[in-house]
Image (tube, one colour):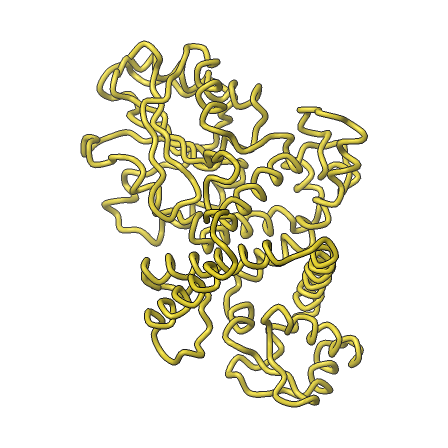
Amino acid sequence: MSSLNSLSELTRQLLSRAEKVESLTPGSKGQVLFQLEGQSAELNKARRELLEITQEIQVRARGPADLLEQYQIQYNAFSCLRWLLHFEIFTHVPTDYKPMSYTSLASLASVPLSRLQSVARMAMTAGLFTEPDPAHIAHNPLSVRFATDELLRDWAIFVSKYGEPATQAMTEATEKWDDSKALNETAWNVFGGTTKPFFEYLKDVPDMVDLFSRYMQSQGLSEGMRLEYVLDGFDWAKLDANAHIIDSRTPPQAVEALSPTLSELPDTITSRIQFKAHSFFDPQPSHQPGPSSPDVYLLRKILHDWPAARAREILCQLATALRDGKKSSARIVIMDIILPLPGTIERTQEAMLRVRDLSMAQAFNSQERKLSDWEELFESAEPKLQLMSWKQPRGSAMAVMEVGLGEY
């Protein structure tokens, strides 16, 4: 979004984009415009452009007092979201959009009537629920998704119960540990009152490993993080029909979680898949050099979890495996964010990338990386690696990088 556009020009663009979104949206013009399963790419693009212009207008028109008021609105709205989730308000309200009395809902949820009304009415300012009359509440198309989509609730529960409070500890973590890269000197360590690294801390909190796993799965609901983008980012068709692909995942519990999914696939596919527990900090299992050695080592959303020194350890093990496999076409395929230069992409898109960058810092003392950071990291591996090519599939928040041995 160009900063040269005047507010009046932005307003004209806003009207134009709004008309386009309405023309592409099936059903009535009053239909909610959030992302729906199967929604067209053209409509999603128009929605993003509309949201970007809306955000730009707000930023331009806001003064310092407006900004602080907006922050107060945001953190109170977020606390209301946690309250609604904790007391299962979304699932108590009828999903057929029929009104329910506040009195009945308060009794069903075992919450004070006046507090329920205050919280629900604050949530309504963010677009959740509707109030047909002062005595009743009902779902709208936005809030009903939280009632009917368990993954969406998992996402909301994790970030409201754990993610947001942990961000508030970032100041104390910096005060205490400065620019530490230690895995147990993070904002999450302050928040959790623990000396353990993030993944170890998860195991100490009842049900948190399962919730975190479901939260990670829920990230697929975000358009920019969809798994299918990995298909568009690398030329998989160039591989032989019997290609050997190793997909690295973390934490180790992922193996247990993934194994049952094989029962959902046809035998022609399951016969070619194996799940094995392995630390990517250890040497890769040995393979016969030559044609039978692995063709691709896939790392999707892995390296951003680790500070540079630890990420380098992972890459060194893979670089060694490439060298020992003696297959010049073998590659490491990395799907992760490549941070843009500030102000070079849409404000809302950049904001989400900056959120993920800070999330890595808060949990792991790591970061999302710029292109130059990635190139430096690859070159620092032993044997040396180099970035052969990279591609950012349209609509994806992440890029797909093809990495090979430096000498090839």
